[in-house]
Amino acid sequence: MIRAVYPGSFDPVHNGHLDVIQRAARIFDHLTVAVLHNPLKPTTLFGIEERLAMVRGAIDGMSNVEASMFEGLLVDFCRQLDAQVIVRGLRAISDYEAELQVAHLNRQMLPGVETLFIMTATRWSFVSSTRIKEIAQLGADVAKLVPRPSNEGLVARFGPPRVHD
Image (cartoon, rainbow, N blue to C red; front, side):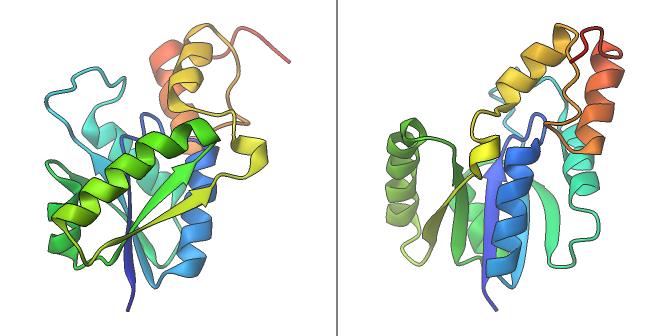
């Protein structure tokens, strides 16, 4: 059984993330979406439980995908799960350099783990959690960019959209 981990802060999970999750789920026997709890970075919009709930809602019905919280080193979490692969999504070439460095560091710390980069589908390549939060806070409708649980969380936080298509 090949186990993979897709780590991130998922603040909030958006359709680009979901695209990577769905595609990775077709490749691996089991995929864990690992929601990072970083107490040193208290700048997330949503708390760890909220983010975990949004991810779980977004992956509902995917039989070989689960969501779990982790903190600390990703390689330690991979050891704990006996995961052989780390999945990382790339939106643009600008993501590649930073992701490559992290992949090499992870490989140094855990030689048995491979990192697989999945290019986000072109239609989601412009979507980021940062931009989603910004435009939702400014009153735009982001429902087409995020799964239902994330949209509900954003509406609860910022109110219904004020700017229409």
